[in-house]
Length: 123
Image 1 (cartoon, rainbow, N blue to C red):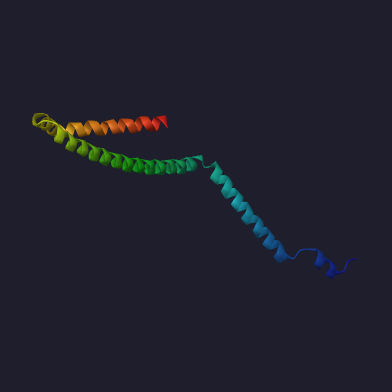
Image 2: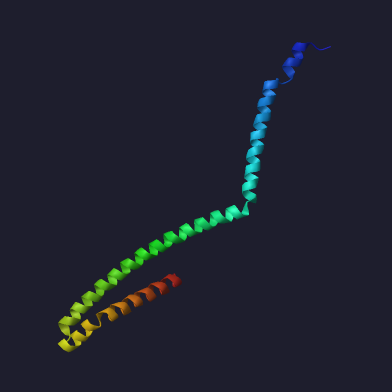
């Protein structure tokens, strides 16, 4: 027969078995959580929608800032042109330009927006 000391050395102790079972349970729990996350299509779609919304908001802010910069540049250029025209155009024509300044600035701003839209779609 075998002696009790040999059985104790070859068989794992009950504490060691408990630790092994606990590790296996933790691994199984992590695996189940990962599978549940993959199966949660609605949650993943919601997360993706939030991500896309944040990117769109950031891009909109960026475009708004660029548009404001371009609008200021257009206004500055319009004022420069207006100053040059006032110096060279006779008084009645200059008065007509001053009277329609808002219309001219709006037309110039619209032209810049159209140009930016065309450029963005082309590029």
